[in-house]
Length: 367
Image (tube, rainbow, N blue to C red; front, top):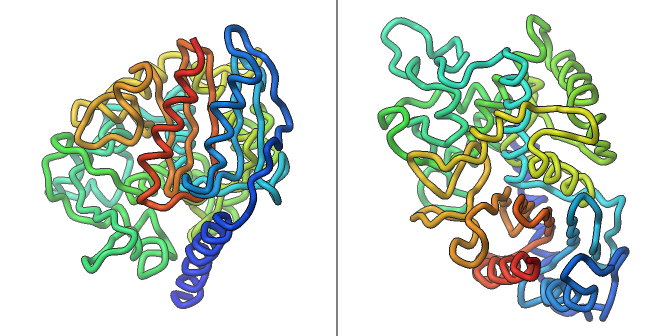
């Protein structure tokens, strides 16, 4: 099974690299917009001038861009071979979705932010991990030993969790790690932390239900009733490990419009149409800068200066927040501007700075 998982993961990375390499030789059409229209204070021409550069191969391969303003799509463009029905990989945008699911359970009163996290393995006599709170997990300051490397000569908890010894039960692998820092004291970005939260969410949803398939089914029912259904997410597809826990750190798939709907849920502070999915108060928590890193909130990035920053502080309003995924996935929300912007694709590390600058220019195009 470990070999099967490794082949699966290497296949994902190989296909990403091949597509990225192929895109540089393709001619980008002058216009491939499903939607392009004037918005208040911004002409369709001005929008196109800001969006077309995102499809330049110098920024990698952009597969989809959607711009929503005031709840309506004002620009939508796809690369050849992709369209409104295409499911696209979330990478770490999944972390923000996991944060929203935690927010639903906190809003329900089923989880408490500042209580010890409900991880039974940590609550044995003398275990210092019993100090870790849900808030600290959400803000990536658990203090657990989690080494977040994709490719490195050093040991990688991320790779071991996703395709190695921890692949069967990723949440169990993540929560088995020792405490190496005082909880709450330091920021440590970690996919494993998101898997601990995924395990907590799944345990809360499934309750006493046993068996991987039963846990998956319980999660699917909850999502349909409380998240994907009310939001109208037509392509949402999370992956699950063999224990039946959804892989909430990096492994979800959605259409570009689905990502935009999730962004709108954040912009509207938990409302989808007339229905409230997450309490308004949750977003005071989610969007507030962490005391350990002002560029991070509760499973979402903030546009603040920091040694650890994934957005573009100083180039756009500090109130901008966003989910950012490996290889240049962006789901940006600017409440003051009424904006939700999605960019999905494949970008190499050396192109990421130019891509971030282009995303910042697109945000600044709006008053």
